[in-house]
Length: 181
Image (tube, rainbow, N blue to C red; front, side, top):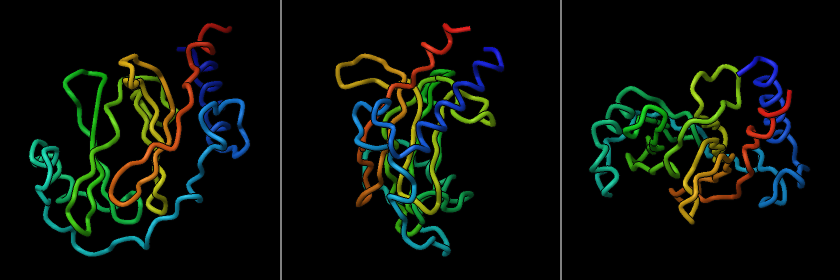
C-alpha cells in the first residue's frame, strides 16, 4: 500500500473517531462515542488479584490470563489489564480484559482478522484503542457478523458491569479508498 493511501486512510479514520457529529459516516450511531463520554473509576494501584476461574473462557485461557495478571498493570477502564493472543491464524487474534482488582476475565468482543491500522505506529492490521481513564473500547478489524458474513468495521464498545456492550459500528471503508489514485 502506498504511503499516500495509508495517510489518507489514517486521516479519515481519525476524523471519524474524533468527530461527534459524523452522522453520515455512522449509519448505526447517532454520534461517534468519545472516551470522555465513558469515564472510568479511579485507577487501581494495588497488587493484582489471582485469576478467578469462573467461566469456560477463563479455564481455557488460564495460562495467558495469569501471565497478563503477573506482568501487566491496569491500562483500560481504571482497573483492567488488556491482553491479546493469536487465534490459530497468522492474521487473527482474540483477547481479554482482566479486572486487576477482582481477578475476573472478560472476553474481548469477537476475534479480529487483519485490516489496515488506524494509527501509523501500528504494524499489524488489527487495532484496539482504549484508555485507562475510559470504559470505551474501539476495535477495528474484519469481524464475523450475526449472519455469518465477514465485514471490515470499526466497532465501539462500552464496558458496563463487567461485560462489553456494543454501542454501534461503522464500515471501515478502506476498500473504496484503495481503488482511487
